Image (tube, rainbow over all chains, first blue to last red):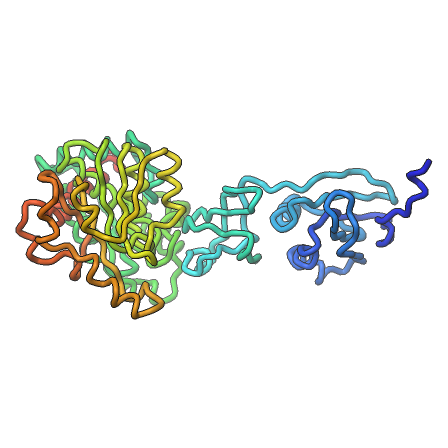
Amino acid sequence: MEKDNKPRKELIVSAIENGTVIDHIPTQSVFQVIRILNLDQAGQQILFGTNLDSSKYGKKGIIKVNNKYFEPIEINKIALVAPTATLIVIKDYQVVEKKKVEIPDTIREFVKCVNPNCITNVENVPTKFKVIDKEESKLKCNYCEKITEKKNMAFK
Amino acid sequence: MKNRSLISIDDIKKEDYINVLDTAETFEKNPVQKILDGKVVATLFFEPSTRTRLSFESAVNYLGGKVIGFSDASSSSVKKGESLKDTILTVANYSDLIVMRHPREGSARYASEVSSKPIINAGDGANQHPTQCLLDLYSIRKTQGKLDNLDIVFVGDLKYGRTVHSLVIAMTNFNCRFHLVSPLELKLPSSVKMHIKEKKLEYYQYTDLSEAIPKADIIYMTRIQRERFSDPIEYEKVKNSYVLNKSLLTEAKPNMKILHPLPRVNEIDEDVDTLPQAYYFQQAQNGLYVRQALLKLILGV
């Protein structure tokens, strides 16, 4: 078939045996995703690429993590900075699960409130936000009621 | 409202507003009712606020309850480094209800999550002060006989004034027209205007106070603070433009009343105090009745 003659762009970053591939990350968010997931501290083999060609988004980033499967709370973290990302679970070189990341209705603990005078930034109180705009990633603090936006979002 | 905390004006439904105001009316007629006999109310003021604290304590006293608490953090265990959570958990053991004022935004919501007793927020930083909003509503209803279909003029610092934000949001339940008078630097934030737009109500913005006065059923005055301006020259330019005086009020409607959350500095000239439109001191007195009503409804007595 003609399709098979085309170079497979995904193979620029080599395949993994077991683990997770995070695909379709906006190129500007790749390093942020690495930091948020603490992958810079991880012991696993990690491959990543950025500014790769994507038929869907023009350019994209990709991260492949060997021998790691993500918990839902970690997936949520990715969704905030990379809402287009796809999670691909690989076992024995085979794709066993493929899913889009989703921004949940509430975000707990890992995002900092933008308001320096918020009780969560002063005392040992875990943060809690209501997601009021999923497209723009706008979070309303459950406590001080201020809005934290994507551009000034920081992670605990 | 029984056993529920009162943290934010957004927590209150339209029926609750009316219930609180109607109950407050019964206390205005008869403020001394010994319905809190045997009850203890804690007033925890992590930052001082004389007016709010005294009106709460006065409300408890007229109802025959007892008050415990502190009037600033330096005389409490906070000074020794105790966390808010520990203070609340401890005081909840000694009281039936906690009234708190705290400099940090969100502190009251957090306290309500850890406390076994209901919390009334008496101000959390620049965030919420719902009892002030309720007494403003009470004053509006009392002077105008209704809450619907009124022209409300807000004057001064509409950007940072938390009482303005809460009252605007509350009044969007009642089909009012909003007239917003402020310097360009201190306009009402779009997050608050959003509430007006959602209810498809009318609002008008002005920089000139005299233009709005003839339209007003209520003028809600606030103070413009020097520290809100990054450029001191800008402050000097506008500081006297939003001062209400007798001559400005010649075109006011006869039913118009002036409200102010107090303390006033110079934004209402003292020559206004004796006019029939001046209502800000009665407004502060209404705070007593509204707080009595809240104590009754939340304690379920």
